[in-house]
Length: 429
Image 1 (cartoon, rainbow, N blue to C red):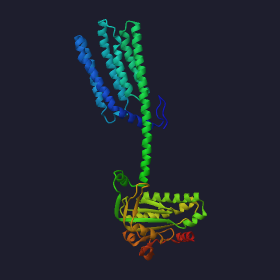
Image 2 (tube, helix red, strand yellow):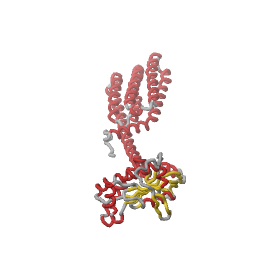
Image 3 (cartoon, rainbow, N blue to C red):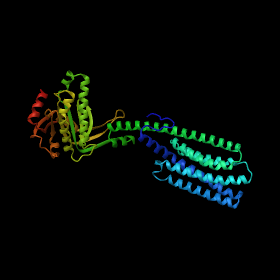
Image 4 (cartoon, rainbow, N blue to C red):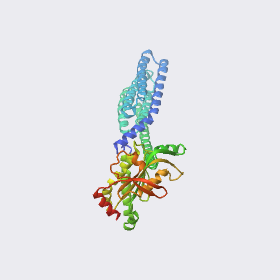
């Protein structure tokens, strides 16, 4: 994000809107403090005036000071409105009105000083600079709006100072005092606006970086696990009815000898990205990839109604995208085997470095073994998955498979159509 010039704003309208809302929200407590202090000053004038002014003059000042207190109090109240920070014109209008009221107060005081033959005609400058300083901070970040405010305020000030000055020298010194103070207030306005924009840019970049880091963490770990790790808790869970999906690429070892490393990475990346998209579609959780193998689970951290149905639908969707993958990668003999087994699993995070949420148990091991019994570009499911599933139409009759380290197990395999069977034969060959 590029730092804008002194009088410009952020190029992106949305960023400018966020900056103004953020900056004005942070300044709101100080606006209230300024307003309360200004009310205290007006109240002090109301207390002191009766000691030195005639009844008529005191009545006039009491009226204008009363209005000043009223509008200042209303101003404080408006700052508690939830949408106050969105409308800087509120500050512009209220502070301009307060400036007019201060002008009227000074007009009465000028008349009194003239009658006393006092040489304090420029005393009103002090009060005007108080309002100007108030506006300089309140309208920080909006230098053009503040310049417009100063122009309006100057017109009001000249209207009350010029008629009251009998000597050019007095007017000259009063003007020098006003304009020098106004220049300082303008510098303050620009400085506060500039620094607040720089602070906003820094905070915005930190927030963006934090969001990216958070996204990376949540890509590796489930949100609930992240919260527990940050709380110093052990992450260990058990799931009584999950379906584990194991997908492996057919003939991967032969492919590594035939195609370049870059092409191989492109092939794997296309396969994994396609599988990732299918997990999001069917509510399946990606666990990890090991070489050319893809491990996923339904019914783990991501809740699903029927884990077996979700797992089978996910497997079918992965296979349905094979033709597209072959076309994109140019590898016509690309084939997959998918194995699914349902049962209890244990999940959790182990270690303190390169953490990942993993799953363990016989269900995971059996799913990996069943994958080897699946037909090319087909799915093999265990009896427990078959019993849980509601749609078994694509699976053939049960058969007994002997799995290493497991023993004999009942397996159901998908039955491909003739076109798919011929394509699978070419892949296997």
